[in-house]
Image 1 (tube, rainbow, N blue to C red):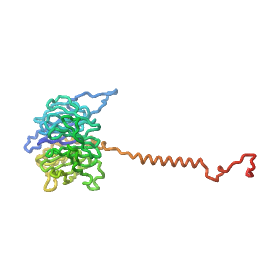
Image 2: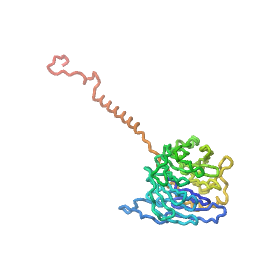
Image 3: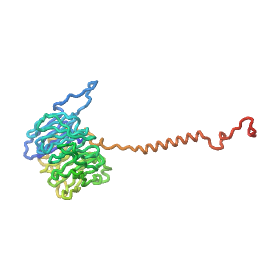
Length: 412
């Protein structure tokens, strides 16, 4: 459910994706400017398209990249696309290792800490694992939910698999026996869009939801430590209500424990700082942008990269200066990265409007009682009107008693 334009970064390797393509660039200042590009539409089709009686494909596929991620060491990179494929790469040097079929379109994926498996979460609520060491091995069903999954994560020791679904639940399952549930983290009132295990504090979990909150959990016990209402952090004129404040990205910078939250429908980035000793999030700043922000990602040695819908400045670097975050003036690296993105701008431009994000996931509310009471009142008024029409008023000629012939009534 993430935007079809996005970022992924590990070490000094930055991947920018848009539509069915991605390009991998180095952020090192001494790099030889080598760029690796890949187009999913040119990859082998794992299964033939099923066609209907009219010869047209039953299930239309766009090859759009739906989710992507690096392994912890950066040695592997994986993505899933709209054609129900899981594509695995080796990054040193870049090489496509396999193209495998997934059962349903995927919404999120992650590597295990040991980098021996890729876990993919799909729209039907299932999590499948695929071997990294056996690139052509079939997927294995690990666990399932009754509703669509939106994110999946693992604990740093690979003991637990954490899953977030459309029905407001975060489940913590034992990786060795996924049917065994350690805990549920309950409290969100809308779909859970993103979950993130804090690397420097592996007992803590961050989550964001369509209810417009960022929450901090001790996930093994399912205990909620803090709830931050994002709408309350904005100016009243900026946003009304919580809709549109579901995070499409939670990023963490280990240097000073900064947490960055990017929401899908507003051109702002919320910056928090994690106080681990008190197990609390402290709101620091709100960054406002004149253009739509597609994605954000931290580079440990440099700061926050922001990918935005602006051809002149598609990639901007932000760093804290004193107590405030500021955009860093363009240097040689920023100019080189921006130049590559401008050359491939059609890749990003084609991704605009290609997805509907989280809008379709909000609960639809129907006030049936008001409609029922209104219709009931209308029926009662109609029945009363008909009754009055059938029953003449007292004293009217119709109400005068008629006397039959032969009766001694002078009125006859």
